[in-house]
Image 1 (tube, helix red, strand yellow):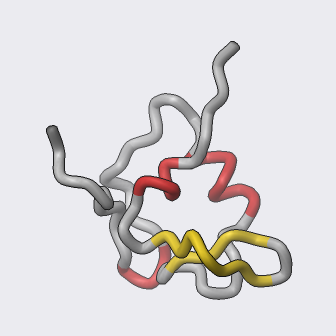
Image 2: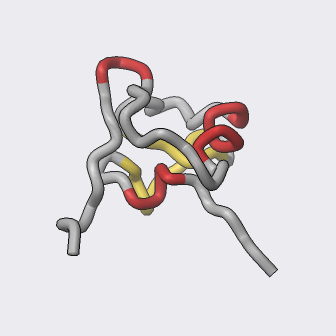
Image 3: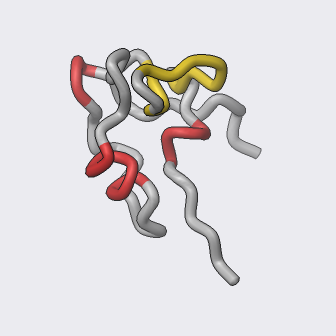
Length: 65
């Protein structure tokens, strides 16, 4: 069984400790990451180069191996 999770989880801007109104947050979405963004970022072929709002781009929280 395949379980896709949002690319956001692997981004340095994602806040693992906090949420807003029950939604995960990050620097681009401090008032909660919208559902449509979570869905889009959960697709297997999500383009990491597509920027989020407020000028933030995906940056991995771990260096590439």
